Length: 222
Image 1: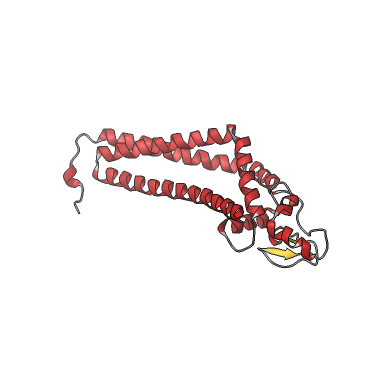
Image 2: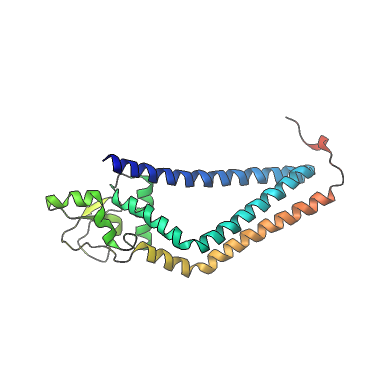
């Protein structure tokens, strides 16, 4: 029991760290945009230079992240499988954030488990109910084309037969297929963001060069 709680705590910590990183990036982007606007309106060269530097660092970080993801995709896939397996093993259907996210993925992608429904056989709740002759399966996995299944979107449902009425495709295959189908859109969005950042860098440097002398009396004092 203590081991299970420790594993859930580690999983929760990983998700929280990722969330905090995204919040930090969003906050930095807002601050950077604000400084860029102030620098452009009041023609403050140091703020324009800071805006250019921040954009350059973000662009470098994005390119580095893309390269690392591409060359370390096998390691990333292994880490993802470890995180997902922890979610599946400790899944209880008590509306935890990680469980809700996984339920949503299985419903929308019409998949079950990481590599297949067999991943769910290690779930602690499902295994504990085997002694009571109760056959449980994840509700978000259910195949709606099969009649006689419970109408629930989350949690665990009771099966009417030993064969689970679920999708047989693993979510890793569904996600990979989705990425391949939308590869052009994803690359287009990434290139578009990079172009916008490059334009912002070019415009900030042009404006910075056009400012001959800084006049800090233009900057409002609060």
